[in-house]
Length: 239
Image (tube, rainbow, N blue to C red):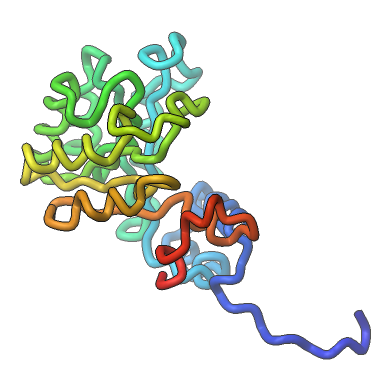
């Protein structure tokens, strides 16, 4: 209002997370130069030097029907997106291991199209330590690229979202088992076990140098006045 005293300038971290994310998505999807993207106000305000974009394959193996855009075209899109922002945007490929050609598509995406890793892998009906997904994990280790594995309770339409036991296929314990069996495999635990397993996730990978956690989901929870069951206490404050 006119005549109102000016308040302190908002800090970069006070920007609404969803608005910042939406602005960045518009920027990286537009045919502008990498320099323009990195120097844009949303990226500068958020202190973002690099961004990771992950692909999801939720076609026939998961929901029984294929998406309008074939996987090959999706991979081409992400490859082009990454090329427009070299060193600033890193795109991962994801192809469900239940597809007969999944290893060929993944290898081509990484070796020939330059994608930076594999993921997100979202366990639904399988765990990260299962034998069926092991060839993909070995391929990632051989190629020297990281894999992103979902570790938040609930997937898709929140299947198993109330199962907090280690029997849940997305529990971090399965990722830790995989990491011990394939020490050359680089693993990113997506969502850091949000919201019930973050402490367990940290404990499980404490002595695993091939694992890191990301804090996707934590930003929205920490910014909320109704932080879910206090799950961020002692976690987000230091960050």
